[in-house]
Image 1 (cartoon, rainbow, N blue to C red):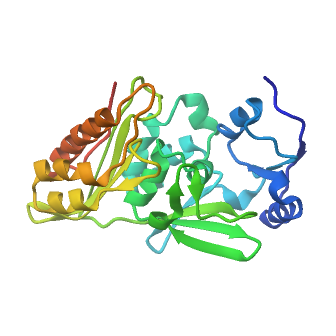
Image 2: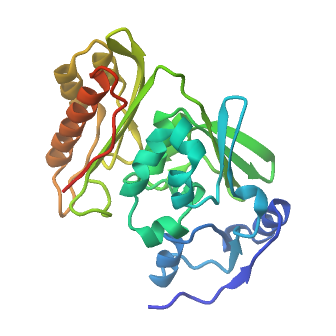
Amino acid sequence: MKAPDFAYVRPASLDEALALLAEHGEDAVPLAGGQSLVTALNLRLSAPAVLVDLNAIPELVGISETNGIVRIGAVTRHRDVGTSEIIGARLPLLAAALPHIAHPAIRNRGTIGGSVALADPATEWPACCVALDATIVARGPEGERRIAADAFFLALYTTTLVPGEIVTAIEFPVPGTDAVWGFEELARRHGDYALAGLAATARRSGAGLADVRLVFFGVGDRPMRATAAGAALERGDIKGAQAALADELDPQDDPATRAATRLHFARVILGRVAGRMLAGGSRGGGHHGG
């Protein structure tokens, strides 16, 4: 199947892009990496009159660090996020997540802002944003907004973005020297969507952990933060943390996987990540299983 006819515009500035989106309203769609949008076009699931390509706007690309904040432009490619020296040194959780994102061709073209704006609950970047207490920066007709990642993702493919508004950057506070993290994902095959995944952060506190943030993906309609499980982990109670997930996660049955299976996978990966994070000197890590 081929995409429906549409007009194509490639603005050179953010103001020009926003003006085009405002002019055409619901008939216009922004294009970042296009890895989800092009598929939707070809399947006729999306039929915009105008495609507004954001890839020629310099201010939407790049990674920088200023005053303890790492800023990633929305049109920065997945590959460039995961291989950046700044990211490797300051936000290693993002570097650990990169190999789990689909396949090299998609990592080379897809963008972090596109992934965040799409809000697919089975993908890695949204969960990492919540785990790292990121701020989503958006611009629209009313100017710039800064939205806590915790509040940005509302439901399946649904965010707090309003019509005519686009994600321009994601900002991450640099974790302290006592930070620990963990990442784990289970999928049928490498590159498939996660059956269950976990992005976790915490601070080392004596022999234990403090400020634990456990954010699951693939087991609900958005990144799911498990606060009761995190509190149990702060007490060093891994089994209690695993048990708490029954009341905190909301996986659904689908034709291929039962909800109970996804919940079991979530408990398994929590046990693995928690064990590494509680181990002396461990900073967690990422593993992929099928």
